[in-house]
Length: 259
Image 1 (cartoon, helix red, strand yellow):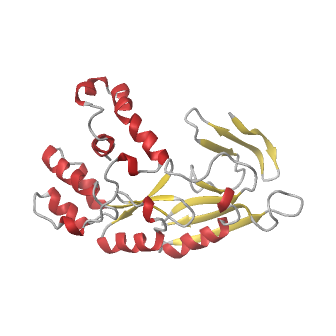
Image 2: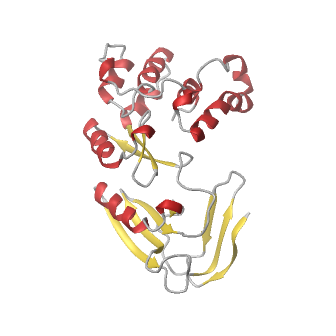
């Protein structure tokens, strides 16, 4: 589905905006003599209640991440209503070597930021996890298994690199212990995960718990989790006998959606 027809625009002689079969939207642009730094650039559109906050958000993220740069900002001018003059038509910024773009849009849109798109922040130490969690988390109700929502309702995952190593292990008992531990956490605790992985006792009282069952999740997440067992059956017929609707969907999220 074309959101903007492929053609010539003031900013590019060949540009188009389309939506693919999965509902993900893509902007395809001919760059001419401009150097392509990154082939695919995640772009954030600030709509609804967040409209007009793109520049503020860019500066906020640049203040949180240690390696950041704010690039060129193009603004809406007079006569571009409903967009307010001076708000962001397009802006480029870089966080930890990753190129991003952002824009405001005051037009009516049937979407906003939600859990369907999230950014993973990989951390080497607990101090890093604590730092990003404190700086970014703005909605206690959204904290779950290392996930958080920031002040703009953007979802991020704050994850230790050590957890990737643990989840690659082929030992089912180790995987089960790690899974059981992290499903009870809000902010991930590397020491507790490591001790669970090694089969050593850890202080479960120190783990921040939330979401006793699927009913405690936001509606958008509930809908995805409820369909997860059937999705697994469709994708992997050989797993049919191992998938039960009586087992909490969170178990499958952890077991089948590894790195």
